[in-house]
Amino acid sequence: MRITDAAGSGPHEYDVIIAGAGPAGFGAALGAATLGKRVLLIDRNAGPGGVAVFGGCPVLSGIGSLNGKVFGGAPGKLVDELAPDSVIMGNSLTTTEDRIQLAMTRLLRRAGVDMLFYTTLIGASCGNGRILNISVCCTGRVFTLTARNFVDATGDAVLARLANLPVMHGTSDETMTKTLLFKIIGVGHFDKADLQRRFAEKQFPYPHQDRFMGTTLGHSSQLLLNLSAVSGDAIDPRDLTRMDIELREQIDVIVRWLRREFPEFRRCEVVSVAPNIGVRASCNIEAVETIRCDDLDGNAPVAEPVAVGKRSYGEHYVKQFSSPWLSDANGHRPVPYGALRAAAVSNLAAAGRCIGIEPRAISAVRLIPVCIGTGQAAGIAAALDFPPYAKLRDAMKAQGCVFAKEELCR
Image 1: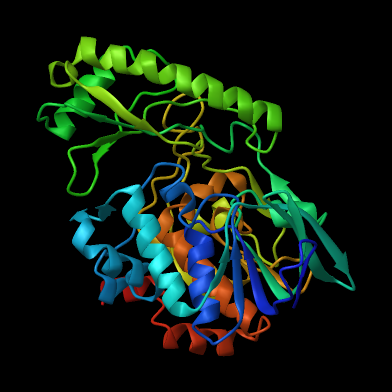
Image 2: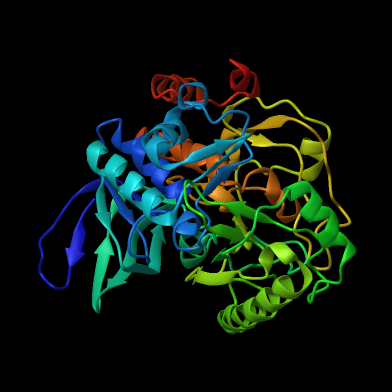
């Protein structure tokens, strides 16, 4: 429960350390800190937000309700904090990256979370069936961080892999396309359904993309485009670099094509490109319980629910939008407690898209509101030393969490 700082800034003690400050890490930190625990949240980026900020995707979608009082828990708090700076249409909330980062930072500070950014996770040590400590590097300084319990909210199961824990590594086909989101202005009014129809009738420059995906952000005039796409291994350093280069080259080609093919886009201009690739899936922990495609297809009952995911999966395939294993099953299915808990050690939970789920099924749990929900559950569980489910359930209820699909209809 101590930081050993080679630079001499002094020791600090923690109950829970959370690696990754994206949506899942944000939820985990709030969940643990609300219980009065000493919580440290670390991230390699300049602040919280993860894909919502540094992946250029300030969009919350895919849940039954965006009313904070209905959805509850950490997702509800974020929705309420963003209310003055966001627009809700249907089941999607859009805002801008700076508002997401500021809203998350304010909520984390109010909860008393200690935050350490510009900090890269570089190692982990295990013993006696537990993670003992992690090593990080920040501004050229190497730290050893120790806590009683840990949460891996890195998205790519980085903490689990550095601790040499078993993971499921999906193939390039299974882990979907990777994208680089970009924003444009100067677009004329269009009907989205009509544009999607016209888009599908034309020959897009890249054959793996056959669906128009664009969203106006918050109260701005910016249109966020999700059109670039490549396939590859997001945890292979050279492949990740290759994909980044290819995606940035694609944007120029895409914009020229849009200007040529659609009158509404004739005067459009790129105003920003996300700093980081949007990775939809890569690795998942070997968990106490694994969510499988069959579970979603059959809507198998969940004895120990901790968050609400969806049943459909199989989008963003590498050859076209729909994969050969696409399932369009309607409705929601709870995420089980066991899917958060690492099987190989007793003091690690995963949160977000690296929980225990088959790679082909990852779409069921990877959207931002679900990641915040699994994060909050993981943070509460870690704060309580991974208690029996009844105790976890009571603590989650006390924080207003929604973890049964019926509660989405309250």
